[in-house]
Length: 185
Image 1 (tube, rainbow, N blue to C red):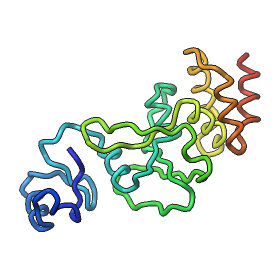
Image 2 (cartoon, rainbow, N blue to C red):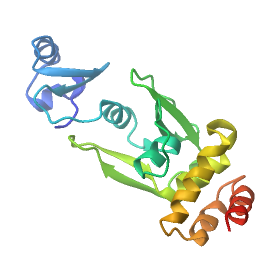
Image 3 (cartoon, rainbow, N blue to C red):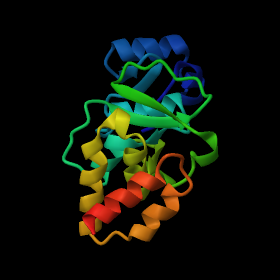
């Protein structure tokens, strides 16, 4: 079911006050400030719903995306979400780490995926983009994350040329990727 916001309540046949009463009565779950979902809706990740409801261009990145692609054993304690640099970082109740990525390269390796159990979609970076970002931002995410993900990706048959093509388009990425590939070869 779609996340419902008070301003969209009339589209669902409710007034704002009726939505609030329904939420108090247990007919709607309050996901976050201003975001509600029917209580009988299928199970869904509320953090994903909040990120997608707050920013249509929200894109799962870094450790969170590597975990989705099963390229790391690290369990992220927050949802890593990228938005274009210059955008306002939304206030959220969920455990979301917002990252600002350059507008010119924001869509590189980005796809939209449906949020399971919801009618919303959220962006997700490709495994190759996530590995390159882990090397590029190794000072923030740690040096081991990128190496671990790269080793697993290569073990599954990943092609180094794909990584180098993406790394060449992102700042501070090509050198560390080439060094890591050299060491692993």
